[in-house]
Length: 248
Image 1: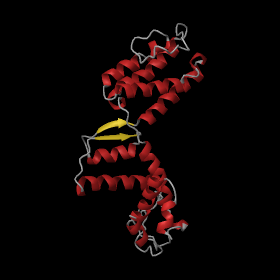
Image 2: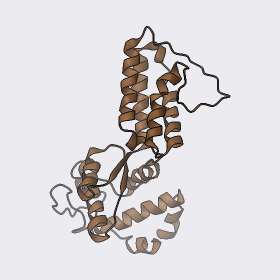
Image 3: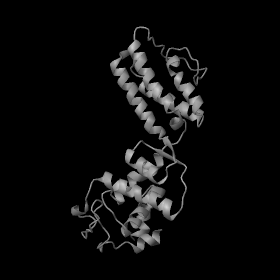
Image 4: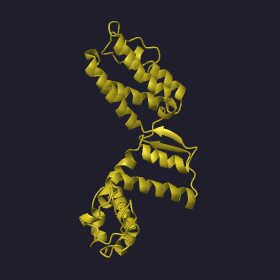
């Protein structure tokens, strides 16, 4: 890979190598020139995902049975275009964050529920990891969260040495109870997509890194392999040490 990058070091001749991601018109300006940045990064990302799935399906004949995503409608739609029977899992960190936001909003509305966002979202992760792909067990544990809060545990992951720090009283807060149960019911209804311990952490980390070498707004074509390879080296070594050999 380092030898490949070394051969691609002199990248000033970019004629016919950069194009507008929306119009496909060629742009012959140098890589670092502002006029190269055409189209929103979202369009470029969708274009990249489209090409990726197209190559996996049509060129490499790769069969994908499941997809872990963060509910990005564009990427999800593209994946389903090429793999209609793919099974979807919602990223663990993403749905934990969404759940936490909802609980915090509930706490702002009902003061006796304040401070539960982090605790309940962490507990939700514990449920997911405990149940793994047993969505029926996941449903039962999520359904038991309300009972867990009022210290009437019917179905919960409970450490016997743990002393409950709260025993909530919903008797005079029927609206709060209903709103909490709506949030829990949504988790139960989508248990098949939530009962797992998959996340996109490594993928997201690499995506953030690769944009420093290959911005989403550009269609690099031949140049992209060199840019992507540099990102891979940076990601694997977690430092700039590879530059000493490539650009010595």
